[in-house]
Image (cartoon, rainbow, N blue to C red):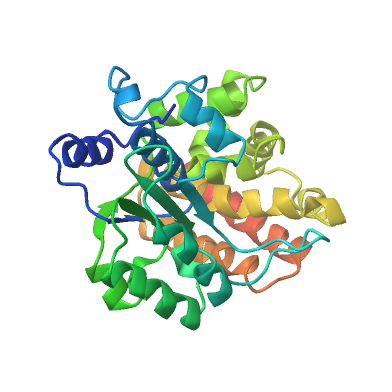
Length: 313
């Protein structure tokens, strides 16, 4: 069941019920906030047709015949376009033009099982130039009774001609209440404290939260609190030396600036603002530029300790 994004659901259903269904929907927003989940739900609702008219919103029961076909990957009027995975499990760097060409036989006849065909592209940002230009032809001369759902994390980078032929739906992060509901369903064994820690680090993105699941964010938060009260910075930094600590290090890079920002709100000053800016700059680049984890963790620990001192004044 899709949680949140009520305005987007309403806009899509208004178009469906009002007979104004656009042939291409550009689902734009940050990674992990539910754009693909929306595309899956909207495509299922279209393909289920009148048989789903008594369902609420975009919800269609997983026991519905159409839902079962899609889950099995055997619905004749539904396609998903993504980067290919080879027999060794390696994911291709981009969506290729041959994948777009492979869609074309689908459009040479009418839908087989209902009134619509649906195509999900996840994500359209990952098409190479040739694929994007080939796909553009489908948007310029849309096949009848076909709806495209284009997931995009960076719509500004798309060809303007692709954007101009789509109805854009913008997606933002979920609020904390919706995050707790979504994560509670995805992580039924997580306790309230762990869910709260995941909500705090993920900034409205369930996908981002799942990256940190199982990393004991509650314990990491307690370690950060200890540093702000004068804890052992060297021992803390050495904890990120192991090969398996990379994901936990990423979590630290997300949590530390926010914890300093929280402290700055309770004890605002130029010094605290400066500490936040230093921490934010360091943490934003540390993973991307592959900085030494132990050195960065020690530097962050120093900033946290200094923030703790200023907070106590």
